[in-house]
Image 1 (tube, rainbow over the protein chains, first blue to last red):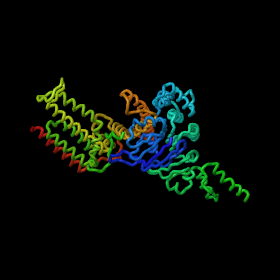
Image 2 (tube, chains in turn yellow, red):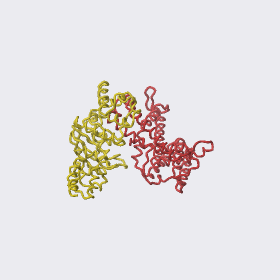
Image 3 (cartoon, chains in turn orange, purple):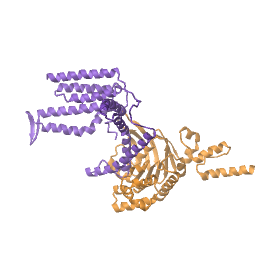
Image 4 (spheres, each protein chain N blue to C red):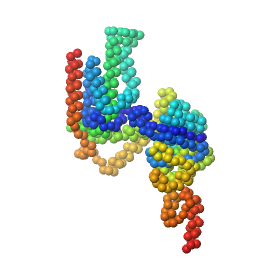
Length: 289
Length: 266
């Protein structure tokens, strides 16, 4: 599903003296089937933006077009039911949404809400659990008896079980160990390509951004600062520093190498790119000596 | 959640904001007591004037108070309705079965509505202009005489301030979990009463779990910093009674005496 933001403003506690602007003048386009990343400091409006993607928040000005559905300030809550099924939202620390007696029931909760029969929902839930790597033995356990990492997986399975067309991820790997993080990100990439999902990822892990995202959105103080491919965004190192954005780890290495006299035509963002530019120069050094 | 104004502090530095929380607490209690002595309309005019002046002095928009009234609206309407139709009186205007509308009923209903409004406005004013921690400090001071009968004043005050401190946190947590469950297709606002009650389960269980987590984290933090019970602890926030507090108290005493005298004469 294509998603378009047209001049969207969002004000918290609108028409009260404590009104604060959450988003201003957002114009964005997420193409169907692409992997997008949103980066920016804490409080830059990323989470507010995310909640517009399945109309948990409705713009105070402008419109959001999600697939066929147009969401404007006048849109009524009842019209949004169908939209919520199509857009799966994984919140920060999603394990806090678990509540059922068993793992399977919890994962089957969303499909049941969206009109599937119990048998169908259980079937979908089992598939979602296998997908995130939860063994069948765990299905009848209490979700609260699982480890933190397992709880996270179950919660994510609970969103995948909606079989959404758009998957929105708000720092899905926060608090996971490096191995768990790697597995989780690989899983999302796999689902994205298999089901041709539109993915929108909010993250502070720049390595994940350069590795997976086709489009990057940089936010600051409720505005979109810049959009573009990772190469464009991470090319300008002083600009990144100025806006307190981190470099991906290859970028940090490149900075140090540049101080040693190595030359790079453009900042390599992934390890293969780095090797491609670095290897010829290393050979030169060797032959020189 | 933002609609729930009761218990939400409105930042400001008005005259009312700067008053001593102890004074504001005492005045609130006295004001409520005073309301129940008011049997005639001139008293309500006086009490109404007190509220109007206090609200004006707080510099907070009236709309804020009106919004705070909304959750109580049904209770008020219900009580007023009861008074209106079930008070028996001499001058009956309209009757249908055991429902009757009399002059006494009208007057009673009016008084009840006025009492509700006055009390809600005054207590909303207290919570809007006083930070929860100030209220807890004020209460601790006011209940401290109970120490004589071995009442654990410090512990109760601590519990109170912790509880107050975590109200906004739990509200945020509620919003967060509600959003997560709404994203999974829960509808909190529509459907039959039973369906809506059932929809609360996916909210309440995670909320309870996270409250327990918060409590146990807080306990660990307090123990690891060597917290012991409050006997003989010095205070970080010290309440200071100012001249203006005495003036306000004086003015209130004068007004309430005046009103009571007026009531006697009628």
